[in-house]
Length: 292
Image (cartoon, rainbow, N blue to C red; front, top):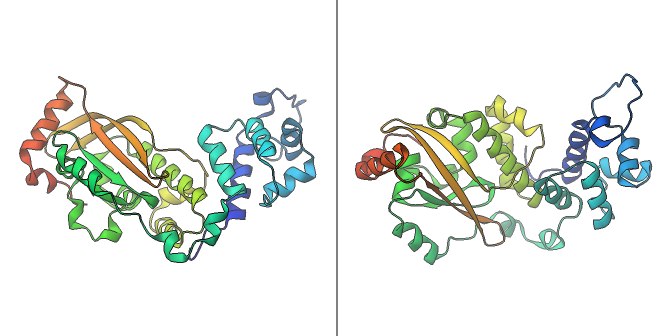
């Protein structure tokens, strides 16, 4: 996959997959016992729910969102029962911001540098794993505890410091995350969200193409068109030195959502908190336990 992602194709497939997951009874429609040749709502049923003509909705699902209004998109989002993240993704695909079209190729792909004050903050946090990510799930900066938990990303070339690459192409990360399937799903959903914001990013397109060739799991998940925002939650991990950990993570979005500050912490007094303290005491030996 070279160049840019096809925004019209992305819009078409996203709407089709969202429509396919709904049943008539989900939205209060009678199916009248008729056999359906395809899963989900028909286009005419979705158009009826959204209050638009079938022809208008058909043009949109074919990828022609150039003149669609925000009000119509809101109606379609409600009819499709979209989440907030899905509705934002639909808007990104149907009505891309004009300034992105005017940006040069270099500006579209260049990562913004991590602010010095943020780097200093990372360095000052010595008990909690923390890192900063950018577009395409690139890992831009991290502290000593993050290296102890996830491995020494500094050993990797900058182009390979990327969460999606690590999750899908590095066997150690499949072992690290106990619920690897959920981690993989989340990772692809984040990338899909990023693709909606930056469909003209050739580096993102190249990353998707590479992972689609090298990972059957990635290719299958990418085809679902599911999207999520990075937020908060709990991850279970199995570290080769300290064993099982249950850690809560928080995501703080920075600089127009292009960067995110992520922290992991354990419940005070828990075995996981003890394991984190042990990791801190291991220092560079802990970072060497996982090969990124």
